[in-house]
Image (cartoon, rainbow, N blue to C red; front, top):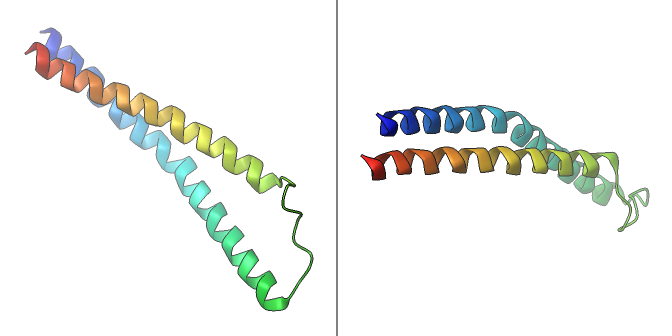
Length: 91
């Protein structure tokens, strides 16, 4: 009976983690794509308006926030997988 509860809890945690990771990961990917596109455009134009190397932009801050969310929910997914394997080990 405990193994079934562990399987159910693991599946729920894993599903929740996958569902919650999709949003921040998609936004992070879009931010990276837009930053690459802006750099290519600036290089093509020969613009000197790019930010200094050590200066953080708002997009960098948002990317860090999204990365923390992805890591946090990834850990929840790992806990879910661990519960599923623990359920098999108890079985």
